[in-house]
Amino acid sequence: MNKLIEKPHLIFLFAIPIILFVGILNGNAVLDINVHDTYYVIAHLHLAILVSILFGIIGIGYWAMKKADKQLSKWLNGTHIGLTFGGTFLVWVLTKFYRTEIMEYEFNNYLSMVITIVILLIILGQLIFPINIIYGLIKRKDKINR
Image 1 (tube, rainbow, N blue to C red):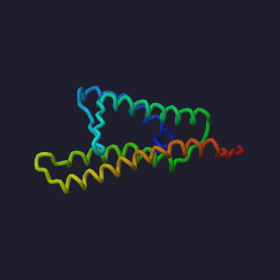
Image 2 (cartoon, helix red, strand yellow):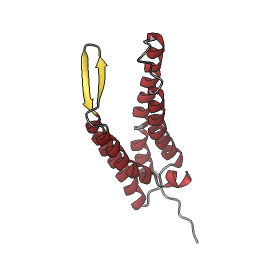
Image 3 (tube, rainbow, N blue to C red):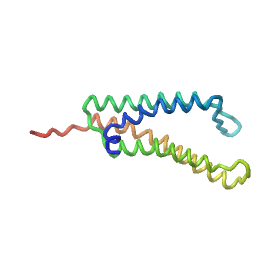
Image 4 (cartoon, helix red, strand yellow):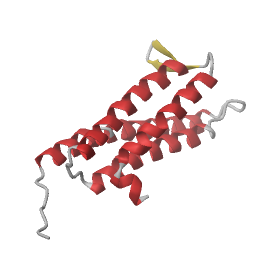
């Protein structure tokens, strides 16, 4: 785990082929988002491509900071990785509890609210990436005399 916090670009770049593979396997599946009277329909493949591009930008950003020998905050790296991948896993697990056969609206409403809150935390967690990059650019690297 310490290796991933020190080199966060590895997990983001490694996740891209997996996300694209899952997007291709889902075929014609779509994600329907209902906002009041408007439905937004996004194909899983298009969503996978969008997330892969985002992960590519994040991975290249972390890699560039490593190559520029800029020191990033390990705490911010761990928080960003945890919110991104842990939150995504939590949303996936929570969607498995969604009840469609027996329509218990109260249970589904609470579950939908929890899933929405977790997704908002994931999105807000992505703000940690630019904060960490700015932190790495501003922070002076401590030089040790040997």
